[in-house]
Amino acid sequence: MIVVLAGGVGAARFLEGLVQVVHPETITAIVNTGDDMMFHGLHVSPDVDIVTYTLAGIVDESQGWGVRDDTIATLEMLATLGAETWFRLGDRDMAFHIRRTELLRAGWTLSQVADSFRRALGVGVRLLPMSNEPVATEINTPVGWLHFQQYLVQRRAQDAVLGVRFVGIEAARPSPGVLEALQAAEYIVIAPSNPVVSVGTILAVPGIRDAIMAARAPVVAVSPIVAGAPIKGPAAPLMRAMGIEVSARGVAHCYRGLVDALVIDRADATLAEDIRDLGITAIVADTIMRGPVEKRRLATEVLAAAKTTLRQRS
Amino acid sequence: MIVVLAGGVGAARFLEGLVQVVHPETITAIVNTGDDMMFHGLHVSPDVDIVTYTLAGIVDESQGWGVRDDTIATLEMLATLGAETWFRLGDRDMAFHIRRTELLRAGWTLSQVADSFRRALGVGVRLLPMSNEPVATEINTPVGWLHFQQYLVQRRAQDAVLGVRFVGIEAARPSPGVLEALQAAEYIVIAPSNPVVSVGTILAVPGIRDAIMAARAPVVAVSPIVAGAPIKGPAAPLMRAMGIEVSARGVAHCYRGLVDALVIDRADATLAEDIRDLGITAIVADTIMRGPVEKRRLATEVLAAAKTTLRQRS
Figure 1 (cartoon, rainbow over the protein chains, first blue to last red):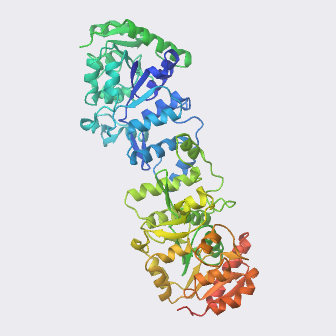
Figure 2 (figure 1 turned 60 degrees about the vertical axis):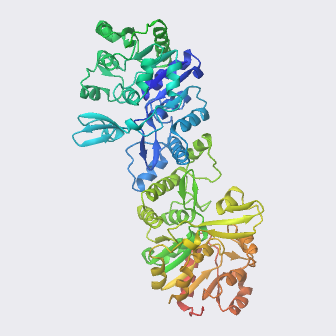
Figure 3 (figure 1 turned 90 degrees about the vertical axis):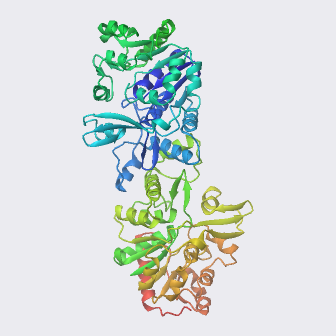
């Protein structure tokens, strides 16, 4: 049993590699839902969708999100009818949000919906939204607090970041199976996702951090920062705003005391010693996942690291 | 001011002709909402949509409903996710239902939504849903009461019709502007729609029949039955179940006391005298609307009839 804490694109790509080297049914992904937002009255779960689409082989690989070769007839007509359409939702993509919203209104939980969707698409990996309670990641900027999607997509991460908050986090509970999966895990992996607003959100759900600390499994994180910059996404300003250096070393600081090992890119090999000084085993690998070969290799290296890593967190 | 009581396809085609002979802004259509139904958690208003799409020039003319050249990517993915998809909703079509549902949840009325949509599409005709309260037309059959759409679309009108009811009709009020439009109308036209479940539903909204009776305008109906059969749709079994002959004469019986004149097809000229015996002026015309020319001609004849018809209803 491998448990993976997952954000969006980076985590999805990592999981794509992982399912090549272990049976998908032995993997549980705990996925960030702080990016969830209502569009057109429909509940959109960007990170859960990215992971689902990617593992189902239907993701638009050039974007890393959305469904491949999707059309936008619905969105264009919504624009004609006066709706705001800065969040690009394709027609096939829209079906997930329509159905999710219908099922949630009928009393289903986000977990039940996610499980139903991944099974319908033949995804073997168990996908657990971090929580069934609503959590909204918001970014404080000079124009005020913005939902993460507004900050990232609508305003293209152009605003200075003054702070981050997870609205609703106090009332959120880990979704069913999350704590049990962490307790039973053989290995726990933190995917190469944004440490502030993807992994950070998952870790902020009351009970999850404690469950990781108490777990018998070694915890291995993969740095999403390579050579001082994120592979994708707005990690840099968010890390800086939190006073965290935008580097693999900064990532290590984020996860200090929580992880036993951190997989960093070959480009960051010189940071290994600093990371070890934080009580974290630094493992140097090729972490940039350009294609299937690199994805598989990274998964293999992370698993090997997990197998040899001593539990040293405290 | 011309007020038209409207169902779906027949009414939409009639209105297409009418806007060619009078200014669209002088026309108010009161549209049946008894066919409204939730699909995938979205509020679908089939008759309002058919009229809107037709007048906007985007209707799929071969079907008479839906948007021309529409795709069904969303519906196909909904099917993959386990949803029932017997009601064919295209991708552009879906945008209307998504937006309507969002606006209704935000507190808008059906009237406000319909007005917003027709303006967004440049439709000059004022479209008033018959009521903002929910009304559901249901058909009693050997397998039980079915929503009209289930009876017509899902089960293809295969069941014997034992009865018809309009659930919610007692609590329904005419939507804002309906009674005022009828009172101020110069002419009132009942479009060639199903007299039992399209026009019948509108007339069953408390207050609407009385307002028509009290109106100073002549009331002219167009028979949807030609040579003993409806042009389109399930009028025959529904009329029969109500004990109404499936003929222009049967239509006259339906509207007896309510209309001053009935426009019937040339094929039914021999019924004119029977209709006159019911106290209704029978006007013989070409009522089958094959194309723009026929639509325009019918509208012209109906208007001419309205101008010369004496108010004789009681």
